[in-house]
Structure formats: C-alpha cells, structure tokens
Amino acid sequence: MFAGFMLGTWMVGTLAALVAGVVGVFVVLRGSAFAAHTLPLSAFPGAAAASLVGRSQILGMVLFAGVGVVGIARLPRRDDHDVGTALTLVTLLGLGALFLSLTNGYASEVYALLFGQVLGVGVRDLTVVAIMGAVAIAATAVFYRPLLLTSISSELAEAQGVSCEQMDVIFLILLALTTVMTLPIVGALLVFSLLVGPPAAARMLTKTPLHTVLLSVVLALLVTWLAIALSYLTNWPIGFFVGALGALAYGAGVAWSAWRGRSRRDVAGATRAI
Amino acid sequence: MAVRDAPTTSALVVDRIEVVLGGRPIISNVSFLLGRGEFAGVIGANGAGKTTLLRTILGLERASQGTVQIHDATGSAGRPRVGYVPQKVLLDPSLPLRARDLVALGLDGHRLGLPLPSPARDRLVAEMLEAVDAQDFADERVGTLSGGQQQRILIAHALIRRPVLLVMDEPLASLDVHSAASVAALLAHLAKTQDVAILLSAHDMNPLVGVMDRIVYLANGHAAEGSVEEVLRGDVLSELYGHHVDVIRVHDRIVVVVAPGDPSATDHATLLSGGRETD
Image 1: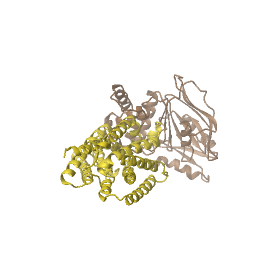
Image 2: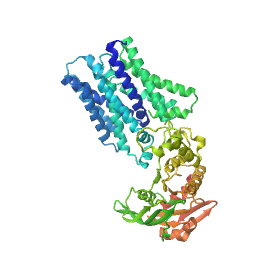
Image 3: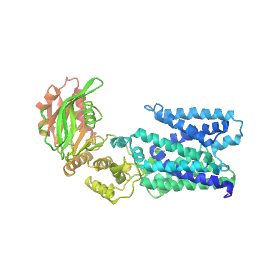
Image 4: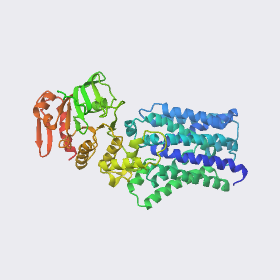
C-alpha cells in the first residue's frame, strides 16, 4: 500500500485532509453544510468537461467551483439563502450529467469522480494541490479572527465593523479550494463528509476555537489515512470509508462528550446546528 | 427642549436632529447631551423612534437637520470610538467559545492574522471580566450562559476597546426582572468606573428609573429630556403627547397612563404594560 504508485494518493490525501480539517471548522460553525455539499458537486462538471476536451481536470474544477462560488454568493438571498445555493447545485450538476454523457469515457471514470478513487492520483498534480493547500491555510490564518467573529454572530461582527458579506465570499473561496484538492480522491459526493464529520466531532470535545481547529485536523487526517488504507486493502470505494469514518468520528464525539457528563443542552445544540 | 450648555466633557451632543425615512419624519427636534460617566435611557413605545435615534447616533442613518457629535476627552484627531451592543445576539450553545474568548474578540476580532499569545491581552480581558462581574462563568461556553450572563459578556465585549460612548439596543428586553435590575445597576456603575457615556433604549423604563442619570422620553417622534424627576411628570409628558397623560407611581413602579379616546392609546397601553410582562 506504500508502493510508489500510491505516493500521489497519500500525499494529496494528507494535504486535502489538513485543509478540510481547518476549513471544515468554519463550515460547521457557520452552519454552511449545504454550501459544502454544493461546491464539490459544482466542481464535478468541471472535471467532466475537462476530460471531454482533454484538458487538466484541476483547471476545469477550479473554473466550475468559481462559478459555484459566484452562484451561491450572488444569487438572490434576501428571502432564503438555501434557494440560491440549491439553484447553483442543480444547474451545475445537470451540466455535469450532460458532459459525462458526451464523453465516451469509461464508466469507472465517472464513478471515480463521484465516489473517489485511491489509485491514479498522479504526483504530477501534487505541486498544484500543494500550492492550493498553502494558499488555503495561509488565507485562513490571515482571516481567522474576522471569519470566526462572523461565524459566531453576524450582528456582533457588523457592530465591530466586520463585513459579513465579504467574509462570506472569502469563506466560499476557501471552501472551493478545499473542494478542488479533495475531490479527486474522495469524490464529489463525499468531500462533504470530510468537511463536516471531523470538525463536528471536534466542536463537541473542545471549548475554544483554536483547539477545535487542531482536533479537527487530527481527526480529518486519521479518517483520510484510514480510508485510503482500508480502501486499498479491501478494494471497496474510498468514498464509503470516508463517509463511514466521518460519521463514526462524529458518533464517537457525541458518545465521548455524553460520557464525560457534559450538559445535555450541549449535545442537543451541536446536533441541531449541523 | 432646551439643551444644557454643552460642557467640554460631553461625550455625545445631539442637537435638534430630524430624521426622515421614506418621506416621513420619524423623529424631529430631538436634542440632548450625555457626558462621560453618565447613564441614560431612551424610553418609548414601539414605533416611537428609539431605533432610528440610536442608528442616527451610530452614523447608520443621516439626520436631515441638526447634528450628532461624539467627542473624545483628549480631543485627539480621528473618529472617537463608539461601542455598540445589538439587540438580538443569538449565541449557539454548541459554539466552542468560552465567554472570555468572546470578550477577547471584542478587542481584536476585526484584525487580520492569528491571535498570538499575549499576556497584555489576557490581562485586559481579565480586567473587563472583573468589571462586569463575570469571572465565575468566564470559562463556560458562552452560548450556554443565561440571558443576564450573556448580556454582561456582550457589555465586556463592547467596552474592552475603551469607547467614549456605549450604545445598547434594548439590552433588558429578554431578561427576567432580577437580571434586568442587576444589568441596569451594573451599567450605571460601569458608566462611572469606566468613564464612558452609556445610552440604551428600552420600552420598559422600570428597571432603569432608580439608576439612570438622564432619560430621553420619546413619543410621536418628539423627545422630553432631563433627569428622571424632570421628565416623568404629568405636565411634561402631557405636553409631549399633546394631550392629558397621568404619571402614576404604584409600589416601586412608574406607569404612564394615556387618556382613553386617543387614537394611539393602544400603542401606549403596550408601553405601560411593558413592566407587567417581566413581572
């Protein structure tokens, strides 16, 4: 499992888990799970279109994730934020279906884009993924406090002169970067589970935001490494393991926090906000 | 209403302002002064113009006439600091955020970069927590605290940058009677000890009557301003409402009764019963 052809998978997986663990904390704190589900599925038609015209999948995903960010951020949101996000999701997912039907590629390729694959993540992509990861981590560090403040309470943030709209766009861009890094391994349908499971568990077990970020990264790394290893050994899809282990991490978090005798209100609140 | 001679110590000078929204004057000819160390309530029923007045002071609405000035004691250049506590701050109980973390964000939450460990910052946070008497629950998750405890944390969050003026929108609205009284007393105390002018809006004046230095009583877009004794009188409020009004003291409570037959009487009846809902 540590053979040379797996090197790309381990390295890209590790970078993706690092970034997903950090950015996922803000997904959970902001209650933006739907956006975290929409962006991977927005990036997916980009990968499909890229295969169609024989260009780099990463480039295609970046372009389409960008369209997704604009869609979520700019569509009418006064009444209901979710409607704009849902509209973005169905439009781009529909395009993805079209592009895939036009490709006369193998079904396994489609399957890999949606459900992930452990093999064939090239070392060639590593530089691009590493640069994106570095940008995502650096941007999170730079905007850490305003992002946190707007995640806690938009009213308080505005009162302190922090623009919630700007922070929303920055958050979506971070999410798009994470998506593009994570999608090739985990698959479009399950990027989401890596962005929600580990940080949701970390939130229950920690009391300060920095600790939440650290624990979330540790859990995301464990989930990803285990998923790669198990998928390699069993030949089952990696997406299954990421989804199952992500849920398991959260379940363990709930159990641990209940066992430690935290107030029941805590647990109820955390479950509700997901 | 005559404006007191503006002493140089006034943190806030509101001078004959009129604010027009949607072609309709919401407040007109409202004037008052507030010095550092003073605690004042803007009192009025729903729709009397409290929020508009606060928003104008915060610079979020423009006065079509008159001026709002905020003065720094040092006379230093630049816009003096104004702290603001919004009305509805919903803090999720599952937030992994201690009360002291939220106070620290009041100091530097708008800044870029990671918060590096800083003893000076920790000391300032500890001082603020002590000032609002919140040391006992400083390490609890802020979302799990009671309404009154959260209000203390929000006050510390707003005061930690040492504003000359602190504006609060209905901070007592969702509190039970005891919490409302203790937060009101705390604010009066903080105004003196932190040398800050504090202005809050409230539809129920009763928790504030014993502790506020000044009252700005709004009705129909006009204001009666002065000390509690000067304003809460039948003749003063009758003039403000434009018809006969009685100010009645029952037990420790003050009730303003508007004569029946007035078209806006139901509105004011809500104001009067404002005290009841917290009992």
